[in-house]
Structure formats: C-alpha cells, structure tokens
Image 1 (cartoon, rainbow, N blue to C red):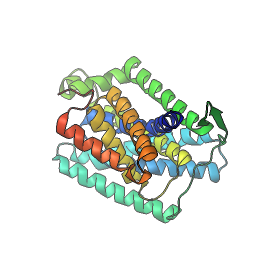
Image 2: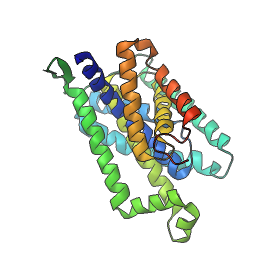
Image 3: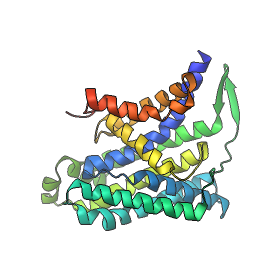
Image 4: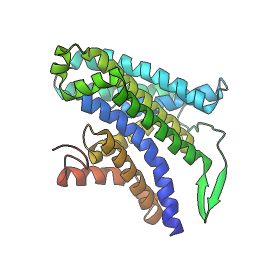
Length: 285
C-alpha cells in the first residue's frame, strides 16, 4: 500500500506538468482549431530560458519562471502572427508542416546553444519528508502547487474578464463573435500568448523535476496530445482529468512493470481512446 501511494504521489507531480502542456494545446485547438505541434519545443525552450536566468543572472526560481513565461507569451504571439496567421484558411496540413519546421529549427538552435548534455533547472526546494513511509519531496509539492495556482488564474481570466468572455465567444462561434465586435485576430494573439506561457511554465517545472535535453520537446508534445485526446478536444476540464490520468498511469506502469514502458502509456491511451471513445472523457461528440 505504501508503494502504491508513493507511485500515486509521484504520478500527480508529473501529471501537473502534463496538464499545463495539455491545456496549452487544448485552448489553441479548441478556440482556433490549430494543432500546434511545436508547443512541446516551445515549452522546452522556455525551460532553457529559466535555466539561463537562474544560472547566469542569479534570479530566484519563481522570478525566473515568471520572466520566462512572459517571454514565452511574446514568442507565442510572434509564432501566431508569422507562422500560423498566413495559413489560417489553408488546409490543416500546411499548419502541420510549419509546426514541424518550427520544431526542427528550435531543436537545432537549443542543441547549438546548450549542447547535447542534460541540464537541470536548480531550485532551493531540496528538502525530503517522510509521512507514514511515503517519501514526499519539497520540489514535487512546489510543482503541484504552481500548477494549481496557474490553473486557478487561467480559470479566473477566462470566466471573469472581458477578454475571457471574448475568447469563449470566439470558441463558440468565430463569425458571430466578429459580427458582435470581437477582434478575432487579437483573441488569437491572446490565446497563443497564454498557451505558450503555460507551456513554458511546464517546461521549467519538468526541467527542475527531471532535466532538459534535446528531444524533450517532442516527448512533451506527444504527452500533451495524449492529454488532449484523453480529456476531449477543446475541453479544459478534460485536459485536467486527462493529465491526471496519464501522469498517474505512467507512474504506476514505471513502478509495477518497468520504467522502459512508461512512455508507451501515452501512445496506448491515444489508441484506446480513439478506438472506443473518440470524443474523449469530457469532450462533446
């Protein structure tokens, strides 16, 4: 039982990162209809930015992550304007090819800048506690708390602000929202900015818990799309549930079967859900 609880706790921590990545993908797809496959490498790049801010400039962890999120939001706006806006009305394959090119370009740039070695985002949260035999690390608690705070902040933004209402209007009916005076192009900027900021937070947190390395972005986007499909396309509550299910499932598989099977879980989840419930757990048919 102690081992089971330990794996659940570990799974909740990594599920927090998957949830941030998955929600970033969910809001872009659900509102703009774009499968943003470059989201993972954007998140990883944000982790590298946080690493530089901490190591080179000596900034505290939370301040470094906040600045990295701000820069990530600005970068997301640039991506939307330069990369995706010109192919807005083109077939979806065009956006996919652009995302693939962005992924390769950013991966190569990160490799040239930081090298092939793994890098860990340093934090002061190094304490380890034991509660009834369960090992609880301070860093994992911080990661879960950060995710909870960001999710609440996003919910308040979407549900309580004028911009949030405009975002929901565009998600429901873009043409009608435009006729009612909503600037759909400005909403696209906001959506990509928020999505990229959440992704950067996820990249920084995974860099603190595990490590940053070339190829991590592709792994993160696969997990993000597994969360997106599991929870339901365009469903933010579904993304939260999907992230929790995927993270805990991976942790249990690593603990009771083998860590080498951990990454297979995401593919298995996507295949099973697409076969038997293609709308996801909380998505609409």
